[in-house]
Image 1 (tube, rainbow, N blue to C red):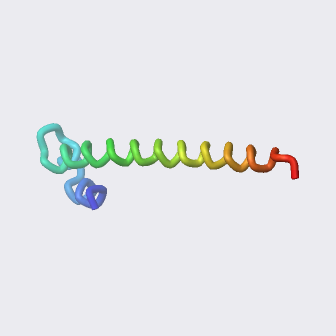
Image 2 (image 1 turned 120 degrees about the vertical axis):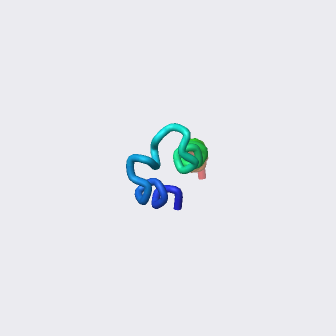
Image 3 (image 1 turned 180 degrees about the vertical axis):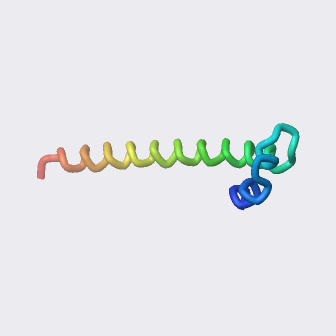
Length: 57
Protein backbone atom coordinates (compact mmCIF):
# COMPACT_ATOMS: atom_id res chain seq x y z
CA UNK A 1 0.00 0.00 0.00
CA UNK A 2 2.80 2.42 0.84
CA UNK A 3 4.47 1.48 -2.45
CA UNK A 4 1.35 2.66 -4.27
CA UNK A 5 1.37 5.93 -2.35
CA UNK A 6 5.01 6.54 -3.29
CA UNK A 7 4.18 5.84 -6.94
CA UNK A 8 1.20 8.19 -6.83
CA UNK A 9 3.25 10.98 -5.28
CA UNK A 10 6.14 10.41 -7.68
CA UNK A 11 9.28 12.37 -6.81
CA UNK A 12 7.47 14.13 -3.98
CA UNK A 13 6.82 10.75 -2.36
CA UNK A 14 10.52 10.37 -1.65
CA UNK A 15 11.32 13.96 -0.68
CA UNK A 16 12.66 14.40 2.83
CA UNK A 17 9.99 15.74 5.15
CA UNK A 18 7.07 14.36 3.16
CA UNK A 19 4.77 12.15 5.31
CA UNK A 20 4.74 9.49 2.57
CA UNK A 21 8.53 9.34 2.62
CA UNK A 22 8.70 8.91 6.40
CA UNK A 23 6.05 6.16 6.32
CA UNK A 24 7.93 4.44 3.50
CA UNK A 25 11.14 4.47 5.55
CA UNK A 26 9.38 2.94 8.56
CA UNK A 27 7.76 0.20 6.50
CA UNK A 28 10.95 -0.51 4.57
CA UNK A 29 12.87 -1.24 7.77
CA UNK A 30 10.21 -3.74 8.83
CA UNK A 31 10.34 -5.46 5.44
CA UNK A 32 14.10 -5.83 5.64
CA UNK A 33 13.82 -7.28 9.15
CA UNK A 34 11.10 -9.73 8.07
CA UNK A 35 13.22 -10.87 5.14
CA UNK A 36 16.19 -11.49 7.40
CA UNK A 37 14.01 -13.55 9.74
CA UNK A 38 12.70 -15.63 6.84
CA UNK A 39 16.23 -16.33 5.62
CA UNK A 40 17.25 -17.32 9.15
CA UNK A 41 14.30 -19.72 9.39
CA UNK A 42 15.21 -21.24 6.03
CA UNK A 43 18.80 -21.84 7.14
CA UNK A 44 17.68 -23.44 10.41
CA UNK A 45 15.18 -25.63 8.55
CA UNK A 46 17.84 -26.80 6.10
CA UNK A 47 20.19 -27.66 8.97
CA UNK A 48 17.45 -29.59 10.79
CA UNK A 49 16.67 -31.64 7.68
CA UNK A 50 20.35 -32.40 7.11
CA UNK A 51 20.74 -33.47 10.75
CA UNK A 52 17.67 -35.69 10.50
CA UNK A 53 18.96 -37.34 7.33
CA UNK A 54 22.30 -38.12 9.01
CA UNK A 55 20.67 -40.11 11.84
CA UNK A 56 21.33 -43.85 11.31
CA UNK A 57 18.17 -45.81 10.68
